[in-house]
Figure: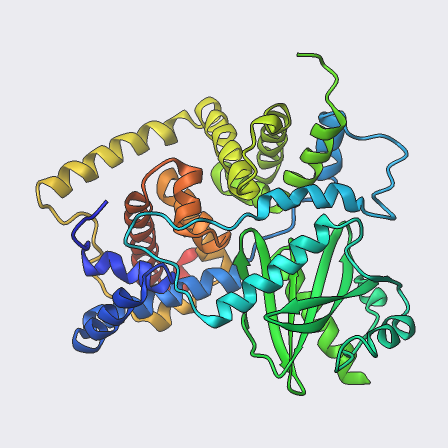
Length: 253
Length: 188
């Protein structure tokens, strides 16, 4: 459908939300430069979004809700193994949800750039791992087992810390391929959720704040020249807690 | 249809529905305005999702579940807050008529400083969002609290992307006007 571009006051929102294609982004930036009122509107919308993000983060569902639902639909049995070991196969079925959104025939376009491509590959690796019989190549909660396993498989063995005390037990590690480069991915767990933490030496921080990609959250940071990207179906706040715990633990060493 | 669901359905339910419970709960809470009611709505929605799991296309589980939660939420609103839904229909009609007549509706006369908006605390934001009519509120919550993109919001709310954008713009304009005019001390 081709339509004439809407009112610039509407487009301010699409601009702030990152929904414009590059040509429209440039056009909006030109208009911001020449129209202070429009620029002020953009600042207000951004301030509002920031306030909501900071003040009203997505809460976890209430404790016990999942259990009540499982009971209600007849899934709950007493010998549930999920409390100690998540069912990899059940998690694997969730792969179907990870098909990335095809672009539609509107004049909105997702902006392609290389950081996005890397982000997609990291998320895709996480999804593929969930689909496999096991989400890791080496299963161990012992960092002294996981770290040496990487030696010889990739150039830089990553920093491996155990975060069991912070609620994120290490469950293993695997080698992912990002672009054409094999990189180390550590796998952690929070409740039934897996977190893949991919370390790319010399990589860029691709999502400094949690970014939603096809229903998974991605968060990255850099330490000592290595870019770390954590991906999970956890809520953004839980992923931020994980990142904080990892950074604090690795700083101590 | 037997009453016993297959193992496959159970596995699908666990992997498709349960990972997105926080999102389901968030949408239900903002629709109903109450935590306990939200749990009821989510539970009802999950029952519907479980019964319909075979019909899930496998593309976007979160959007699929949220669509069901929204329907369950609307059913709940119809029973318990029927006023809110009726008012909304009228309101959209009025806005459409004003728009076609060239009337500038509801545009805040004030242009508050961004810094004032940024200072809004959780209670004021929550109250201001709760006051929004349902279609504006759900659009804003799906975008700014839950982080869905326009295409996903269009899928969940069953409207074109252009409508998502205009509802989002209206919702935000109302919040900005509200947060910008009311001094923080007035809230209580």
